[in-house]
Length: 136
Length: 136
DNA sequence: GCTTGACCTTACCCTATTGGGAAGGTTGAT
DNA sequence: ATCAACCTTCCCAATAGGGTAAGGTCAAGC
Figure (cartoon, rainbow over the protein chains, first blue to last red):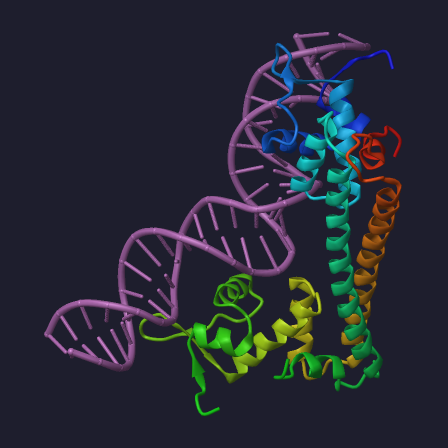
């Protein structure tokens, strides 16, 4: 790569983070404020783009903005211990697990209801009956 | 139950939907506008409370507001076919499945990374290294 | 009859994440 | 000189709620 400087659109293409979100991350303090050109355009270098890629990957793994903020601190901290990062990751795995369990419970309950429903032209429907029931 | 009329707090307790959300659902057109007392308090009857319970149960199953709106129409439509409801439910199960699959992918990738990480006091961390990689 | 606490009203801001678009300035190429 | 493509800031949309403030109402107790 010969070019070392990018405006926001190029940085977005190179990192996979939309220009919209790059501005938002800057506003949120997740990334440092970009330097500006004479015409007030944001200017990024390869290091900045790498940080954006880092964020993108963490996003893809479902980390929240706060968690990413912590990961970024750890990333740039030369003295960090890998155990700090690992515990953040483990914490996040537990959160993912909770959500998965929840969704599985919904799915199995709903599947049960669907299997009860004859699903034909008759108006009688066990799914709605169940939703309308007074007991939880 | 001897009382037939409720104000919003009683309706909230009886239905499990917060007063806040009852007002929001009304504003969103999910439920009809409540009648009002002389002092402009919202007044609910058993039928209204049943509808709120219906919404609550659908919420618990992860249905979105739009989906619930459809379910409510079907619920009050005497001529509906159970197949209409069933297809809505099946559609929702597929959506739940997608989310579950997505979360599982995140979890396994993150678990892989965590297992690579020695997690001790050394600064070298495969998790961060991976996040910082340029390739997706 | 008055006070007090519990309840109600509207209206606004906040959480977290992302997309869309308007109005206007800049850049680069024809 | 013009035009497309880009940039800027600012506001609004969606998801599903929570919080809080300022003010009105109701019922109980004194």
